[in-house]
Length: 370
Image 1 (tube, rainbow, N blue to C red):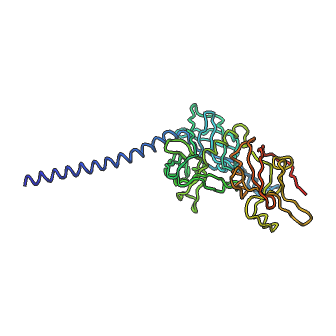
Image 2 (image 1 turned 180 degrees about the vertical axis):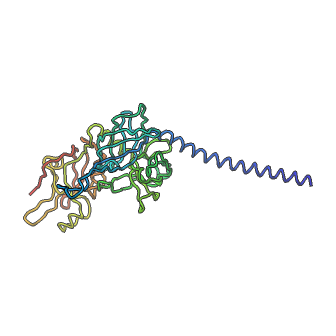
Image 3 (image 1 turned 90 degrees about the horizontal axis):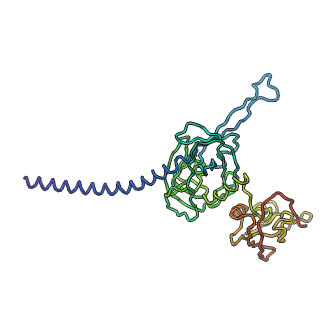
């Protein structure tokens, strides 16, 4: 009986040791992931800010208000997230967070004071805006900027922001897809978007998407949802795109775009209005006078009486296919003023190529060939 009891104690001890060993290994694996998440949060939380957007709107009343209430001024407030870009007080956020605002206030974690900021510039086509603090805390901690080129599906991705006004919230997920084309607030598709299942909710807009090294790889912008809350499909503007925009906004207050001076016309518009079917490419509506395209001899549409004649059709830029305005806009966005591109186009039934040096896009006279 004693021997049997001793045997049972030994077996129980071994079982407990085995359970403890299994539990220890699982706990250690979990803790490593937890430690990484905690480290990322601690590294970035003081760089992520809450943005209040104020604008004044006149309501009610008319020219005379003897028998009516006088016009009143109301303050409408929106909010979102941003992050510290540099020690000079620049704050990166989404354009739609600051759109329509006349005053902006920034609040840092663990700081009850609201700091006023001014708008430096924006790039609506990429939903990016830049604010600058009028005054700021004695110490600013900029984020560590990573790279979005080379991202892999399945990588860890974390979002820090202020969903529903709940400040300093971190959510964790993965990169679900890369290279998405998503229509932005300007109506133009944003190419190269990062898709993530890290929860992004109202109030997260403008916050950073961060990798497992704690580096910012994107700016959280929008979600795909029927309810307005996170459904596991969020999108971020790649940080490589943001890095191209911010220096331009700091220097010029806007992004100076490179182009070759044409007004294209979409193929569906061409078919709808003129009954002309174009199977591929992007037709040139007209070339701007003395622009790069005009000097290269490119031709737009012409008209004679009631007849419309098709001009040249752009097929590709440096080997990248062009089939829409969004294509040409996003492809040229990656180039700088002064770059030279190889343009392939169709004239009649003949494919041609030409080299064009890109210039700054400026309003100018259109040129028609009759």
